[in-house]
Length: 260
Ligand code: DGL
Image 1 (cartoon, rainbow, N blue to C red):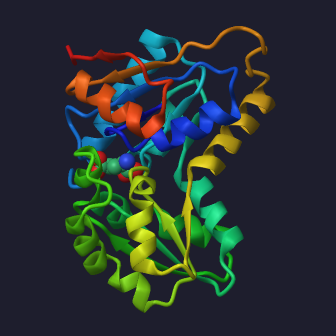
Image 2: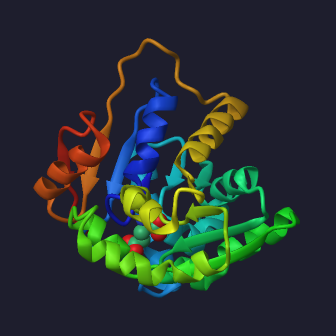
């Protein structure tokens, strides 16, 4: 699985918990984060390059695009190009949000790239459910997470400004359409109010991975010890320090990855 940095660790946590027999190879492209302000074409190139590396060098049997921006830019082309199943976080997140809302007003927040791509609007329309979606880009949130600033006064002030459109829309459900945002859940929830349910795509994505492994008969036999690997294209020791705080003890060693 891959993300621009630490965000996909929210999905890795859910996968490790739900599928304890599976090995995870996690790539955080911290050397090139953030993806959100980049063009979709550039992010598509990155996603293709990373997927090639995971398939060819690490022989993975399934790829999880644990980054909404990369999924918005590249999911369709990755699914066409690669033989292995490619699972994204967008569709599972939409499913989870639609199961939760009672008043039919759902907010989705994400990077500029994700929100601008229209991927969430298309996914909700495809379901044909009577849901009114209000979208808001939250530039700056990812940078706070990457710096390990999860609950500061500055991020609170930024959240008050960026979340105003979804508060004004009267949503009862807020979908965190960026895998970094669950790390800011306390701040986001403080600003939204306790009556609004925050939905992350991590658990639903893990269920989708399990279903795909079952359907294809690719699940790993229990009993063989797992080996997770974590790679970063940026500062590997920072990835280890903050990543371990965010994911937990499974993140022990981080390998530095340099693009050729
Ligand atoms: N975690 C990525 C996402 O879900 C963040 C993208 C970024 O680096 O801006 O969109």
